[in-house]
Every structure is written in structure tokens, then in C-alpha cells.
Length: 462
View 1 (spheres, rainbow, N blue to C red):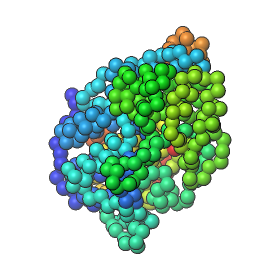
View 2: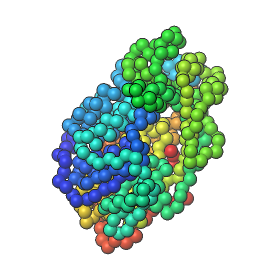
View 3: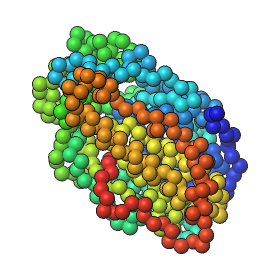
View 4: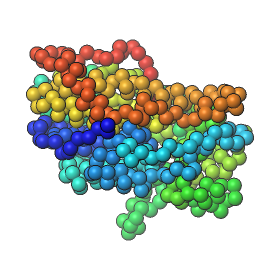
């Protein structure tokens, strides 16, 4: 039987500050609002920016979207998403260009749809649902400079010195979140993963032109693509998705908006040292060097790119805990557990975080907030660690391909869609396991926040 529940829930009296208005912060705010909590968001960006490339939400994320506004939000996201029902995902051998596996797109499940679309456009739908339909207070242009807590409350210090408090604070502001340092008790530094990604980048005047503002996008118009006989097929047949797989390199190219817009990413080896700023302008000449000996179609696509960004993929040690000493501050999404792009689960796992903490707080009530926060971590921690690993296994599957094996079994190079990930219902699961886990954390308030992971263990990703 499908899991059903009515919303919004009765007010719980629990107040929540969320730092960050990305998918993690917005989903957490929306779910907390639906479960009866009082929510305020603080976001450092003064305005929404249509940034990013294609983002994917698996069925486990689609199941969450489908419950919002009686399916209306999922319908809006569907209208903006790539439709690969007919085209599927075509995987090419890097040198010959032959399609070694044509991976079909599973049929859409209306209760758990899958979405792939431009990050900025999908984000705007979720943002407007939170702000305009649910009336969640979102404070843009308010940078958080610090966090604090005691046994009774938690709070943030804003850039102008204002201090704001609540029952709990949720850090959803990414891998550079200042909450990480408070939770950990030390500052963790990023490390080179040995890989980087080039992304197509396009700068144009945004609409209306009278504002004279620039929009930066990771997609570019098909103007040059469609007039070149080598590449016109990608823009004349609706939405498309193709991947070329080579030694320690993979190149993904898609067309969206019925073939009118193009975007690509190329993941490759990169041993450069990195620091806290790991995004740089890229050079087409560097991309051409990596593509030497590859299917000429790849260069034909890349050479039509107006510009590109060089994005270093970095490692971060797995956090031993996502919860502060007094369990009044917690991390969700990339703040807690960054993912490699090859997992295609980073944003979806952030959504699962938001659902889980909302359920835990409602079930615990205002007097059990700290135990609820620790229960959230216990429910999520092992699952997230396991899903994170799939980013590495998928990358290795492609970058270390056994072509003889692929010739015998083409499905061995397919992008994994594992049931234990995609069929998971985060809300139903949290409801089912809450009581058993919650009772472990009830009792006199002490320093119950034991790390779940030894600090010497390595490898998490961003």
C-alpha cells in the first residue's frame, strides 16, 4: 500500500532557523512547515541566480516532490525536465564513437517521478512554492557569520551583528558552511580528488534586456550545432542524452528544451592542488588535448561552446557527526555529506535529510528536540554513506572499463539505477523506525553525541 498522510500537521511549537536556500534548505523548510514546525530561512545571495547545469532527482526524490501541493509541484518540474522517454541514454565508446549500450528510460511512476533539468529552473519552482504558496519566510542577502548554542536554544550571528535564536538551527549552506566547524570542533580542509570537471558556460543578457544584467548558464543555444551536419542530429530530435566513456575520462552531452539548448560536462584526471576556491575559467585548448584520439563528434560539440568553467572535484573526510554537542545545530545536504556527480544522488539525498528531520521533530515534540536531532542522524547516517560510495563505483565502472566485458554484456557499462536507492521512501521509513531509535536518546541530557565514525577514516567527496 502506498504511504499516505495529511498535511499540514498541527503546529508543534518548534522553531527552526535554516541557513541556505538551495535544494537542501528549501526542502527541509518545506517539510518542516508541512509537519507543523515554524521555519525561517537565511540566505547570503541577494537574489536568485539561474546557475548550474543539469541536475537529477531520482525516484526517491520524486516521491517527495509528488506529495507537495497535491502533485502540482511535480507537474511543474516535469514540464521543465528533459523527456528521454523515447531517446534514453546512449553510451559511446570513446574512440570509435559506436553506441555500445542504449540504456532505456524507465517508465514514469506518477507517485515517484524522475526529474532531470536545469538546476536554476527547477530550483525556482521549489523556491516559489516555499515562499509564495506556503508563506515560508526567506531572508535573502543575509549572510550568517557564526553559530552558537546551549542546552536550551541555538542561534546564528548575521553579517550586521544581529543574533537570532530558535529551538534548533539547520546548516544547509553547502560544504563551506560555518556550521561544520562548530559541529566538528575543528576546521576541515578540502583535498584534491585527482579529478576535475569542465562544464560548458554561457553568458548572455537576461530578460528583460532593459535591466542590463548578465545571466550565466551552463547551457548554450543550438545556433551553431544545428547548422553543422555532424551535430545537427542532437538538436533535431527533441531532448537527447549521450555519454562517451574513455580511460579515466567521461564526456556527457545533453540537449534540452526540445533540442534548443545544449550542455556538456567532461570529467578527467587533474592533480592540481586546490584550496577553498576550486572553480576557475577553463580553456578549450585543454579540453581538446584530453579529447585527442576520441570520436571527432566530441570535439565538434566542444568547439561550439562559448566558454567553460574548470571545476575541481575535491575530497573531504567523512564527518564523524552531523550534530553539535548540545544537539541544537545539525547539518543537512552538502554541509553534511557532499557527493560526486556520478552518484546523481546529491540533491535527492539532501531532500531525504529534510523529510527525516521534519518527521523526527514532530514525533518527538518540543520537549524532545535534542533526542529528535540525534535520531535523525542515526536514521540517515549509514544510508547516506552507502549511497555516497556509488559515486565512486560508477566513476570507476566508466573510467576503468573492461571493453571485452562490455562486448559480451553491454549492460555492464550502464548507469546504475539500484532499487535500494530509488525505491526508498524517506518519510515512510522515518515514521516506521522512529520509536525504536528515539528511545535510545531519551533520558537526562548529557553529552550523548558520540561520533558515528572514527575520525581517522577517510574518503568522502564533494
